Image (cartoon, rainbow, N blue to C red; front, side, top):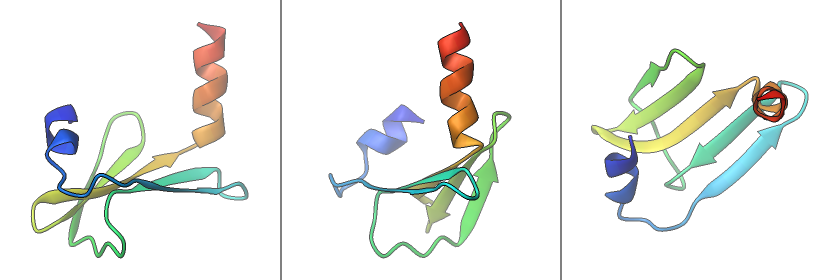
Length: 71
């Protein structure tokens, strides 16, 4: 995943957090219009546009921080 992220031509990142849904949105392109996506085993949705990563969506975002603190 990191090689793909480093290859992103835009060097800006936009982050939005929806507290009600507990979802963290990270976008590497604005506006982004994903035409495909994959979900990982740890509930991260990777969004693609024409085969390039344009964003990631982290489900249950606040629980991730709590789980990390317990380690």
